[in-house]
Length: 80
Image 1: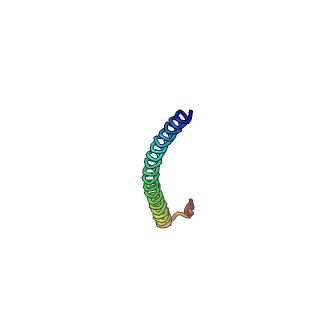
Image 2: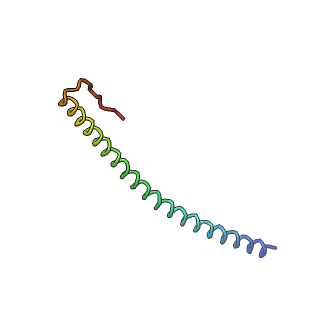
Image 3: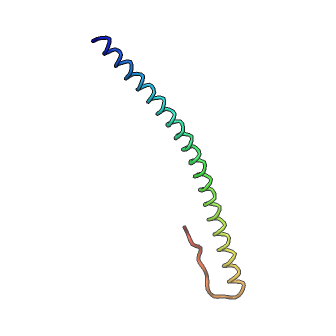
C-alpha cells in the first residue's frame, strides 16, 4: 500500500513539475509580448504628441493666413 501511495505521489509531483514548466514558458512568452506592446504603446504616444504639435502649428498658420487675408474671424486653437 505504501509503495502504491509513493508511486501515485511521484506521478503527481511529475505532473506538477510539467505543469509548472508549461506555466513558466507561457509566462515568459507573455512577458515578452508585454514588453513589445509597451514599446509599441510608447511609440504611439510619442506619435500622438507629435501629431498634436503639428495640429497646433497648423492651426497657428491658418490663423495667420486668415488674419493676413483681412478676415475678422479668429479661430481658436483646439485643445485636445
